[in-house]
Amino acid sequence: MSEPPIVVANREHLWWLLNEASQLEHMILCQYLFAEASLKSGTDEGLTAEQAEAVAGWRSVLSAIAVEEMLHLALVSNLLAAIGAAPIFGRPNFPQRSGYFPSGIQLDLLPFGEQALRHFLYLERPEGMELQDAEEFEPIPPARTRLDPAELMPRGQEYETIGHLYRGLESGLRALCDRLGEHAVFVGSPRAQATPELFRWPQLVAVTDLKSALTAIELIIEQGEGARGDWQEAHYGRFLAMWRQYGELRERDPGFEPARPALAGYLRQPYNIAEPQPLITDPGARQAAELATVAYELVLHLLTRFFTHTDESDEQLGLLVGTSISMMADVLRPLATAMARLPIGPEHPGRTAGFAFEMYYAMSNFVPWREPSWALLHERMRMLGERCRDAARAGGPAAAVASAAGTRVAELAERVRAHVPPALLPD
Image (tube, rainbow, N blue to C red; front, side, top):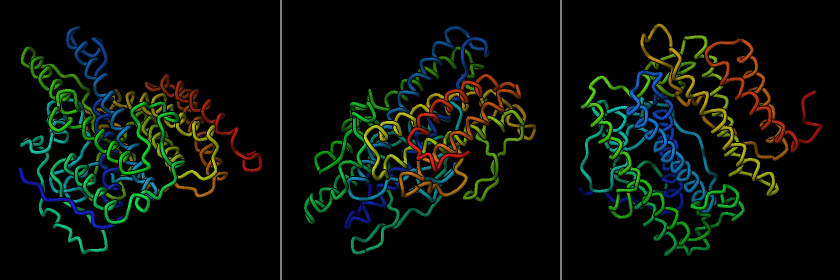
């Protein structure tokens, strides 16, 4: 399959492509987390013992792949920081069919099942592999026109696969270094890098020169599609194994449904999506969705602060990282999973409320100065903790999850509070 070359004739071309890679990794990660949250748990949801064991295995694999997608997002952020750019965690809302990304790359939140697995296989397929996306994803022309190297202003370029995008970034970095010199390309501060020590992630690569940049890109490609076609242990191979096991179980029991019928629902119509989207109207689900949305916002705010920090100490940088991970694992994930058990509302009978990873404004919660940034983080965390406790006291199907989330948020907020100047704390 012939793919058009990706053009990187100046830094802004590279910057644009890395921003797009960041948004793409972010949205793919959300797709996997949504599918994971939709999976049923144990035999109490109508699964046989064999089916429950298989579903538990799929949850573990999805979780592991999602963690690797988080690693990819961190690596792209390191690449951006290394060339002197600010990493971004903003992105468009779901669904994104054709137009925002290349014509063949579409993204949506689907519960685990045949359509989701076909879609994941399509996104993670190795370069050169012919594969059809799930039925509901039909590319809408036109494709992006090729960028002329003489164009000073960057714009979107066409690529068939994620691997194709990263191979283009790889060759573009080499070309820029040949022309400008490594010292002129990698102008970012090494202190702006996410390191294995801070993130406790041995695979994380701090990017400071061409060699480390190429290592980071190669790791993303290897984990996604495999090392130059060796895809058995890559994301593609693991999804293929799930697909085959799912097919075998469905063949033995055509009524086997491993996932809850989660429908991505919003608290309000997304500001940047023209077509009407499902809204959550069930009171209990809306309450859980609001808490999860604020938790998600805080994860992104914490990561933004880490990658755009100023004079934070090593202790403070470690706290930003640890708090973002805890907020994701101990608050957001349990709330999103609890939502998938609740009805979305009478407008969508038989469907449960899936967390839509709602972006309710263009993500720009970058606060230039350290002291107000930490004050704002503490304020929002304190507010979330209070709302979680209110939800727990009110009772309802998600009360226990809200209670645990509130306790954890309160603990995290106290750690952040210790780094806020007393004059900026609320009365």
